[in-house]
Length: 287
Ligand SMILES: [Zn+2]
Image 1 (cartoon, rainbow, N blue to C red):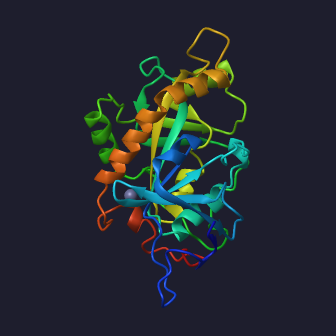
Image 2: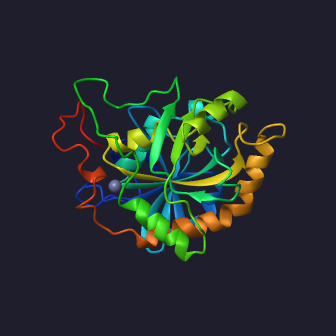
């Protein structure tokens, strides 16, 4: 297994002059169902100023593009949502050359309009997390714009590819990210729904803002696995139900991710995220 610490790589990706060529330009951060999706994958161990990422990163090809895959919870699912090393994960991806991150994720629905199996490409986020370090900017006055938290260039590609694949995606929605690991109470869930918020999950933040702070494009692909507890009349959501719905849709989700990867433009010249840090003096050099 090649190892890579900070910017001192070994194995592929190093030119004779010592310059580092990108090992991957696009990343998928998601569940372990994505391992088999990379062709010719090799694993890269990498360290960051924020510690090690959730797992070694698998790097290979999808649709002729160099793609990195990082299992957000670790391959053995050892990190609960509030313990995921989010800062190390985004830093590690950027240092491999990644500039766009696709985040397939399981979510609860806060509206009966979007039942289990619905694909949503959210456009807004509400942060209800409490304990997670959510910035790289621990010095200086750096305030990254986050009005539109998800990449405005990747989202339309994701929506178009989902439609081409026969999915009927919801092309907007507000994802509220709770601290977890418990699910919501009925009262919390009804309150979220009353605000007009659409989806509830546990991992979408601070991943999205950390990506923005590193000028990475980031777009979630949210698969509804259940109606959240304020909406349904049974015993409340169980983990088994969530896993079951995600497992039933994993192949379809992989196909969608591959289509999106193939359709993404190579350059990011006009991209909002690529220019998110223009005019900001960072307290560190970008990896
Ligand atoms: Zn972008």
